[in-house]
Amino acid sequence: MTGEESGVAEALNRMNKILFHRSRLGVCVLLARHSALSFSRLRELLNETDGNLGAQLKKLEEAGFIYVKKEFVRRKPVSWYSITEGGRRNLSAHLEAMDKLAGMQS
Image: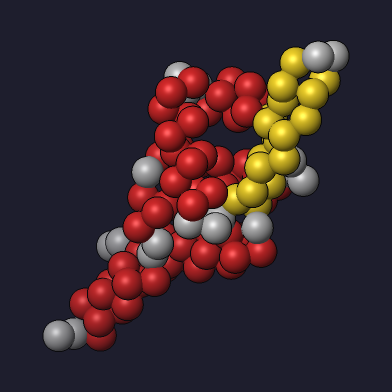
């Protein structure tokens, strides 16, 4: 294996499979930039359906990447999502690996 092939394999191994899905990656990137975002705001920014976004948020929550705080605002339930420190570390490593792969293009 050449040095470049080894570098590609290493970068691929550093990527987190949980973040391969467009919506999950988008959620983590957005939450890394904001202290918290509501479900409706995430749905709007990512142009997702309620069902798909809900499923992706559940996967991120189960993996420990995000956490949710639920409250009532004007008698309506609102779910606020934030990224965890572990989620932030995983996102950073994933993005660094993607950057390394992108830099290997000729």
